[in-house]
Amino acid sequence: MKIDILTLFPNMFNGFLSESIIKRAINDKLVEINIIDFRKYSPFKHNQVDDTPYGGGAGMVLMCEPVVRAIEDLKTDDSLVILTCPQGKVYKQSVAKDLKKYKHLIIVCGHYEGYDERIRNFVDLELSIGDYILTGGEIPAMAITDSVVRLIDGVIKKDSYEDDSFTDNLLDYPTYTKPVDFRGLKVPDILLSGNHQKIDEYRRLEQIKKTKEKRPDLMENNNED
Image 1 (cartoon, rainbow, N blue to C red):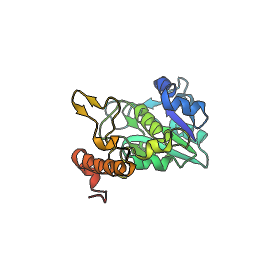
Image 2: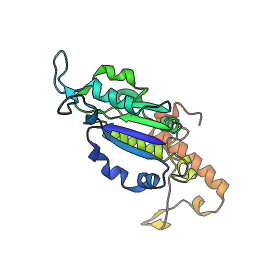
Image 3: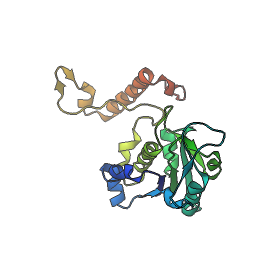
Image 4: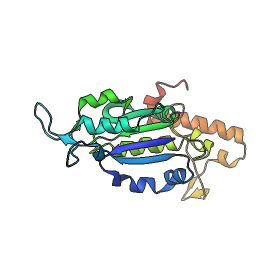
């Protein structure tokens, strides 16, 4: 998979690309991630990419031309162009699974007061990572990239993500490790039993229980009792 991220602040991605699972996936050539400063696509002398909004108002608005020129330069028949914005579809694990199927993602990070509305005509999908406002789209782009890359075959073990939270609209089951008894807080006996069928049953019930308690909204789209 190839992921191109269009941003005005490429240095924000330095740590993201050089640590942990993302770094290993890049080194193993399982994913190619390019951070592109779309100022270089500006037609103006000083690489201007924003201007004041027509009709007045606070802040600066990203211009069409630099963003669209960048998209058109990078886009192929295999590309999906994503715009990160508050108006977009709420990002979920099911969306990450859908994005994993594409060979090429282009993610546009906004900044300032917003985008020229006409940019939306050149994207395929608008995504929001939640109902709150950030200073730019860089953090959403990182979140989307991270959640997709870990699903790519070979990046992590398949059973490491198949039981993740939000799989089947359920939260993950509780996990424990050594010691068995920490200050009177003990690991459930069933997990020490060696009976894997019973352990699987216990974990499924715990997923349902935890989801009902902490995220009952998820149960509305789930067939579990």
